[in-house]
Amino acid sequence: MRKKIVLACSQCGSRNYSTMKKATEERLEIKKFCKTCQAHTTHRETK
Image (tube, rainbow, N blue to C red; front, top):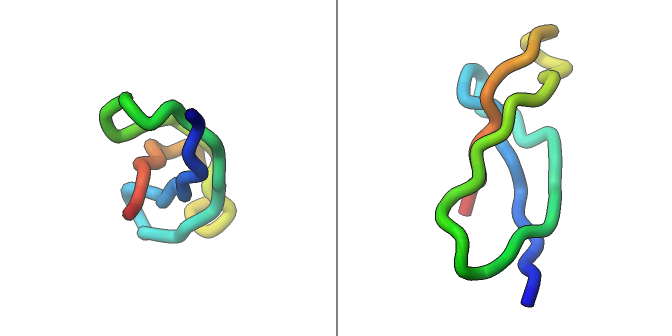
């Protein structure tokens, strides 16, 4: 079973990306480009 999640920038808090993940995993953390910060930053799963 997959679940839809939203990713937020760890620097500015902007919610830029959404993706799917397995329900059994812990919180997802991916390095992505943030349009607000204009840099590659860590994006974490939000509630």
